[in-house]
Length: 348
Ligand SMILES: [Zn+2]
Image (cartoon, rainbow, N blue to C red; front, side):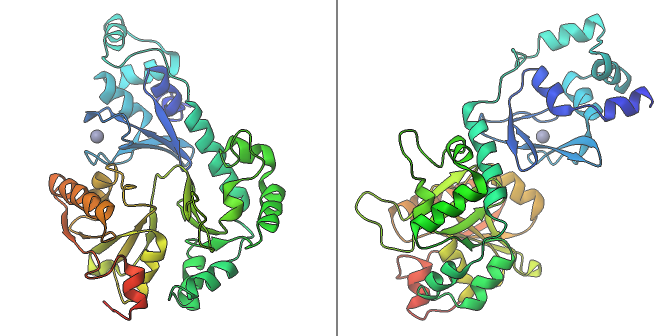
């Protein structure tokens, strides 16, 4: 193996953490707020994605659009060194005195940070999802959604697309299933069973709307009692619930919750659909990702017709303007939400 090949195969996340940058585990890799090309993003941004591909770590930036690049490229850009210097730095931690000086004076060069408690919990939740979801059907979801005007065929199609699952309407049965698949200690580590409690909230919410492989919205089929929430969200919301529509339409609708997402599809919407688990659940990280992944697309911001929906619509529209994304407000005229509009017989 040549020194270049060795450096290219190095564990990039370790190098980056070693230089003092925080990484956030996400869907098989890591996210980072720091891009060696366009600099430090906001604390919560994960504009740079690190992922392993064909045995080598790669990174790309959704903010400046830097395409997938090697570990060597990361070090070259971050430390402003030649490729040869980067290879020596990666392989042996060897650095010329000038390079050592540069590393020491980097504004963000601090002691490597450990992965926080939250990250550990998110990792446990992703592991739990991976254990719980295989084997789940969608019968309870079919029945519940039919009562909300979503036909069985659409729910089954969503299930085929890994966008909806259900456990049992009986909390005891749901609990048994969860314990058998994931085990109690993983449920505790994932934050599904709160300290001092023996029951996971998710056992009472049998409908699952996964958010990629890292998060999930759990929904009740009964009316919530006082103080209960109909839906809870757990895990890391790194990628939202996303229904792929006809690409040629170049339109993406943002709805509040997967039930509204399925409602607009039932009503005849042909483009893509993003469903947020709550009006405020939009992540500003998605603006650069949208503009890179869906250039020229128009965003239809279709949140609920209430104060939270209207306020968050404004925020999303402002963000679109800053990122040069075409967007318009598309709330259901005369209805609280899209499911109400569907059940009143409105079509798109
Ligand atoms: Zn960048």
